[in-house]
Picture (cartoon, rainbow, N blue to C red):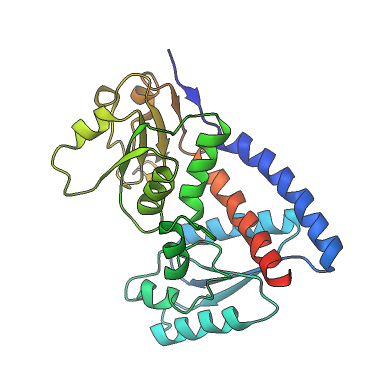
Length: 284
C-alpha cells in the first residue's frame, strides 16, 4: 500500500489563510503592518530565488519586506555592523540573517549580534537555550514545520521510537529537542554513526536532515514508518530530491513528506507567523 502523502502545500495554504486574518486584525489594532528585514550576502542564485519567494509571500499576506544586501566582497565587520543596525532599528519588527553565509564568514559571530527578540529563525544562542529548557520562544522554522506536519496529521509522538539523521543547529538538533519534549524516544545519527541502517530500521518515525540524496532506501525502513524528509538535494539533471529514495520508501511507509512540496511550504508560513509574533511582542 502506498504511503499517505503529508502534503505541505495544502497545509501551508490553510495556515496562510489563518495567518492572513491574524495580520489583518493586528494592523487594525496597531495601525501598521509587521515588518521584516533580511540581511544577506550576495552569492548563491538559489538564495536569491528563495528570498523572492519569501518577499512575494510577505507582500501577499500584509507584511512589509525589506532587504539589506551586502556585496560578496563585504567583510565580517561590515556584516556584523549591518546585523546590529537592523536589530536596533525601531521600525523593524523581525530580522532574518540568511544562512548559510558564503565561505570566509563566521556565522556564529554574526548571529550573536541579532536581537533575540527579533530573531524569527530561532538561531540566536538565547533562543536555542530557551528551546533546550522547554521554554521556547522563537525556534528554527524548518524543524517547526516538520512538527506542524506531524501534529496536524494526527501522528502520535508520545513514546515513539524516532531516528533523526543530522545534527545541525538549525534542523537536526532542534528537531530532536522538540520531539523529546513530546516524550518521544529519540536517536540522533550523523556521519560518525557506525550502523546507520540499524537505527533507521528501528525507527517508527524517521526524520532526515542529512543533505545526502537517496541516503535511505525502501529496504532499510520498517513497514509502516512515518517519514519526515527535510533534504533538498539538486541532482545533475536539475531535479530536486530528498534524503530518502521516495519511489521505494513511499511503498513501505505509512506516511511520508514529498520533496519538493513537503516541509518547505510549511516552513515558509511559520517564518511569516514568527514575524507577526515578533511584532506583537514588541508592540504589546
